[in-house]
Amino acid sequence: VSSGDVPIDALLAELGHTSQESRRAARRAIEAAGLTNPRKRNIAAEKREAVAEALAERLVRTCGSERCERATGRDRRPRALVERRACEVCGGSGNAASVARMVEAMRAAGRTRLLVVGGSPNAHAELRLLLDGSDLDLRAVDGTAALPQKRALAWAEWADVIAVWGGTMLTHKVSSHFPAPAYRSKRLTAMHRGVAGLADAVVQHLDGGRAG
Ligand SMILES: [Zn+2]
Image 1: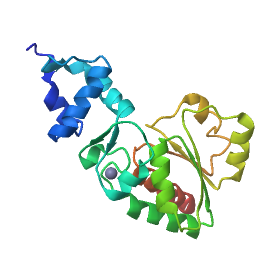
Image 2 (image 1 turned 120 degrees about the vertical axis):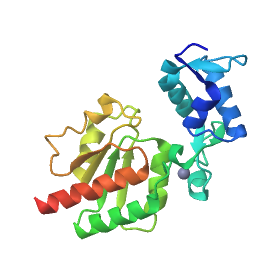
Image 3 (image 1 turned 45 degrees about the vertical axis):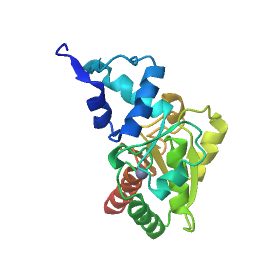
């Protein structure tokens, strides 16, 4: 074992795959990605990011809660149960409470049309689920799909709040449709993965707007 190596099991556990079954699914995914092979016990520490990326790309990784299962129900990739902090839908946070606060803050501000730019389809599904029955209108733009400029402009004009979801699947090509200076008063960037992080950032933006 060279000093730059870590046990694969330990790395997978750190990334949320703590049960044996979950570790097995993760192991298959990183082998399929060519990052290791069935004989190896250790992996170079600098492959950590590549391993995390391969897992996010190849597996549906949820905490197993009913809500997170529902949000990913149509995702056909193999599934693995992970620790709540690693869940791709909730990230271990109370999404429902944060979204409820966001709905309240937007309603109070008289701004009910929310445009979300970026984020995974699973995260969008979760957000839709939580907004169901509220009077908020949501449009969500896939951060990696090609978006016609004309539609981007129409949606930006439509929105009362534009939340750009950083740290998620979001290409510059998509985010550049919604430039910061043009939409300063209604645009914000959320830096946290997970729906709660996005909702909290919207609330913070609205608070800042009122204070200023
Ligand atoms: Zn979850």
